[in-house]
Amino acid sequence: MSKKSRKRFILVLILLFITASVITWWFKSNSGTGRYRDFLTAIYVMGFVKLEYYQPTSLEKLFNAYWKAGNIEGMLKSLNDPYTRFLNKTEFAELKKETKGSFGGIGIYLIPKENELLISSVVENTPGHRAGLQQGDRIIAVGEIPVEKLGTEGAVAKIRGPAGTELSLTIVRGEGANRRQFTIQIVRENIVIPTVNLKIESDSVIGNYAVLKIQQFSETTADDVKQKLQEVNDHACKALILDLRANPGGLLDAAIKVVSQFLPSNTAVIHVFRKGIPINTYNTKNNGDFTRIPMVVLVDHWSASASEIVAGALKDQNRAKLIGTNTYGKDLIQQIKELPGGVGVSITIASYLTSGKVNIHRVGIKPHRTIEIPGALDELMEQGNPQKYLMMQEMQEKEAIKALRQEILHIAPTTGFNRFKNNYLNELDSWIRKTA
Image (cartoon, rainbow, N blue to C red; front, side):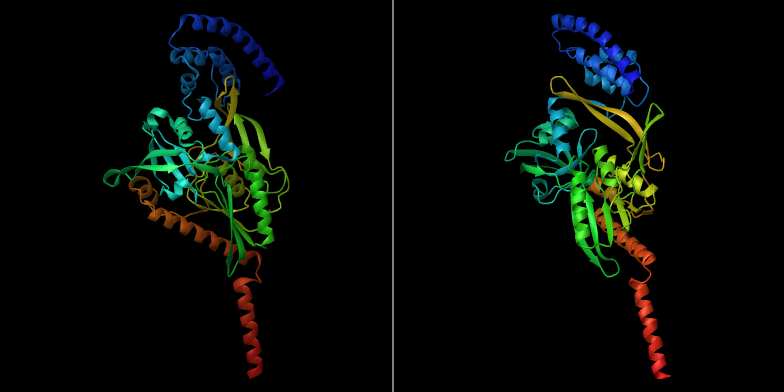
C-alpha cells in the first residue's frame, strides 16, 4: 500500500470509527437479535475491502449490503466472490493449521462444492485411506449435521479434531443409478501433511530419474522441495517429473520459492493486477540449482492457484513440457486478515497473469500434450468408478517418461539409441574389414 493510500485509509477509518462507536453502542443497547453486533469490526473490513479488493467497489454498496444482512458474512457475500469470505473463530484457526503443515484429521484433500465436500485425493497410510475413501467421493454430512447446514469451512473444521477421537462421515459415491450413500466411522490421527513426496526410478534410456509430487503449497513446502532435490542430486538423476495433479494451491510465497529452484534469477513468475492496473511482478528469488535438468510437469483439472502459478511459469519460460489435462483456472490471490476476537477475513486482493502474461481465468493452463480418456472424470464423479481415471493417470505418467526420453536423446546424441546405433555401425564396419 502506498503512503498516500495509507493516509487515506487511516483517515477513512478514523471517521468511520467515530460513527461506528456511536452506532455500535446504540445497537448493543437496543437490539436483542444479534444483528449489527459486529458493526465496529465491519467498519474496518469495509475500509480494507474498499482499498484492497481487486475490483472497484464503493463504501456505500458495502454499507448497504451490511445493513441488509446485519453481519460481515452477509456483506462479503454481496461481492459474489467465493474466495472473499468471513472466517469465524473455528474456521480461522483451522486455516492457520492448514498452512502450518500438520493437524489432527483423517488425511484427505478437499475441494468445497455447494453443499458437499469433494475428495480430490487421499493420502496413503492415513485413516481416510484405510477406511476406503477414494478420489471423487463426496462428503455430505459430518456426524448428524449436513454440510449444507455447516457450510464448507465449518464442515472442514468439524472433520479435523484431536487425534484419537472418532468421526462419522456420510459419503456419496457415484450419481444416478450408480449413486451409493453410506456412513463410515474413522478415528482421527495427527496428520503431518506430506506436502512433498519423492520417488527415484530408473529407465534404460534416461537412467535414474526423479518423480517429485507436491500435494499443496504450505509454509514447509519450499524447504521440503529443497531437501528432496538434494536427494535427486545424491542419486545422480538425469531427469525430473514434477507432479502437480490434484494440487489445490496454497501460499504464493511457497510457489515462488519452489519455481525459483528451476528458473534463473530475476525471471518473472506472475504479473499482479488490482482494479485492472498492474501493481507488481513477482520474480524468482535466486538462481536455481536445477535450471538445466530435463523436466516434465504433470497437471490436471484439480491443479489450481499456486500450482498453476508454478506450471504457468515453467511452461511460459520453455523450461518444461506440461502433460495431462487443462488446469482449474484460478487467477485470483487472497490475503488473510486477522480481526479482533480471533476471527478473520479472506479477501481477494489481486488477479494475475502467468509468467508470459497469459490470462488463465476459468480456462486454466493448456498442457503441451493433452492425455485424457473421454468420460474418465465423469465416471469418477458420477458413478464413483475410478478405474478409467487411474488408467488415464498412468497414461500421463508414461507420456512423461516418453517426453523425457526424447529430450535426453536430443540433448545427448551420444547416449541411448544413438550410442547403440554408433556402436552397431562401428562393429559392422569392423566386421566388413575383417571379412574383406
